[in-house]
Image: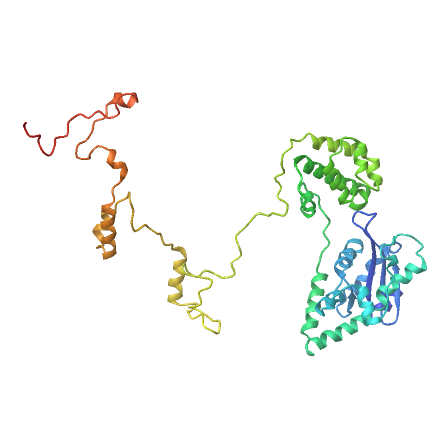
Length: 424
């Protein structure tokens, strides 16, 4: 409780050291909190059941909490301790808004404090106990200078905004959005492997893709059961290498891994059975379109008020940007009715179809239509030249229909000539 009493009226700055390689979801091993006068290092493995006490100050809106790159910290605090953060300032977001070029904490320490950070313990195993003095000093430096950096960046944002709070408000809003993030436990589905497959940007056939899917499912099941990370069970590049090679023997799987993960060596026979199952698939080109999503309707920022709307038609838009036409009233209602109408285009001149009598009777022909009709009447269908005359009907016998080798047309009468043949 002495820690809570010390930081409650002050300005705390929490940070954490997280370990994710030997745990499926990862675990927070250490927490650093700095005030204006003191630095605290909390052993979260020892005090895990008592961490809830910090919610009193972390959720107090009267206390500003300063983080750097809090996207992961917010989720870790929720997952491991049920802690939530209110009223947070993220110096990473401030560095982005100030266009500092580099946004890392190491760069901010060098820029504002002239301190060179020691990266030796950046990837250290923070689960070990007791922690060496060097690692404790490294953890302390993560938060010791950050309140000073917070003051400097807040002043820079104020000056950048011409002594207006606009720039500061942007950082506060972005930090608030980060605080609203929720931890979501990863869920395995039959299509989970597709996300990783699309990121690899490689094309696999059906056998290779089946092996990739089976290995992905095996890795997920093993990682959850053994409480190990994906990278410890079977790294992505090794899994993809095995799927591409499709080794026929267990030793081939071992050859694809360097170094060989311990769980792969232990369960090599099970993995070999999965590869054999994939090799039994028919060898076809995979139809999975990596990176291709279902195409939907294109976003239309403009609302089509009528069928004659054009996105580049500026005739109805004044120079001030406001529409000339009213947005309400009888004219607008009549225009809205046009949304459900559509125009049907018809051919002016046609070769095979004749204008209907209904159209000819109702409306008089214009000069252009008369010219079109004369042109249409001058056309002669070449197919009709080989058909019998419409004035003298031809009789088609049933025998001609059933027997194609006989005469197709059997004329029942003779066509009288327009002129009789003169006598010799």
